[in-house]
View 1 (cartoon, rainbow over the protein chains, first blue to last red):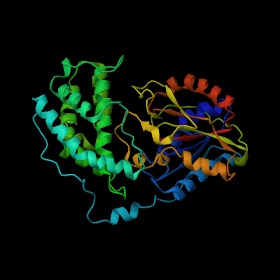
View 2 (cartoon, rainbow over the protein chains, first blue to last red):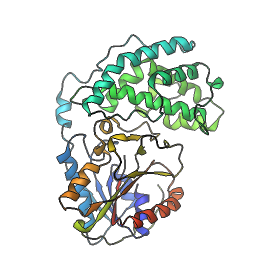
View 3 (cartoon, each protein chain N blue to C red):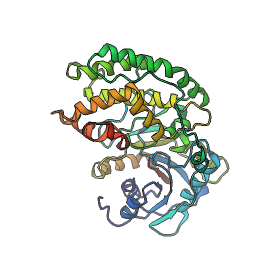
Length: 253
Length: 134
């Protein structure tokens, strides 16, 4: 992020930026940055908090009016709702109860059935979640329906070397990741269907990776991919298939 | 951590005169645009008049919160807040084009791409860029 600021500023256009990792910004020294104490993924603090978002934005833009730099300032406040959420004794629970996940990854049809059932159980909550946001959904990067994604994922989990990429000029593991990510977003949107939007990324991930057949399948594919001879497959497995906080489920950590 | 050398400095106009563009590294794009792949230094253009409810996020990283973005685009891409500031005259205007990269790309690969992008910014009359990480 700070590198981009250097390049743009050098080309004559002033920049200001949010910094989510202050230590990086201290080293890179972009011209103007506002360090914020928020979670990665939430540079303006909290969703549906326009007054708070606006404070962050104005503080960041105001750095443009400083006479000289580099300027690195701190936004002082935690996002609204954080303290209240921490005080909730019951925590988050997924609105859907699933059957125990399928743990054996040898029969594509069994996996397919189990995933289809998960999608069917989640779909009403996904629709509810979408309605809470006036019809908006971020599901869809694969441009494939959930029911078709699960067929691809189930087949890939059992016979990865026999599967062709459904997209032109796209490696099959990249296609797998795109569909797997997209289905995770579908699960995640369903899981946060409560109108209060409760449920952090970590809480939802703890459920998805431990308690669903999808999670088990993604772990199994990652275990396979970590032992692949194909560099693209190995690179994605190492960097971008399982979040750090869920890697204890995997064979290679 | 790469060394970018001395901090450059371009003088900014006053905010009420400034046309502002957003550059996000969240791997955002309009639904239907090509998803981000690998660590190429490419970017997507988000037209200022796009339906922001159609923004999706194809960043490859599994290690940041997405639940906020699912609930409200503005938590990562503050387009509605910027439009409000423009309507109130706090800033001059909002650019016609915004940009999204997928962060984590090697900076050396980004530099020539950014030079090309700056041409678009200048043609759009952009006075300042708001950079937003994820």
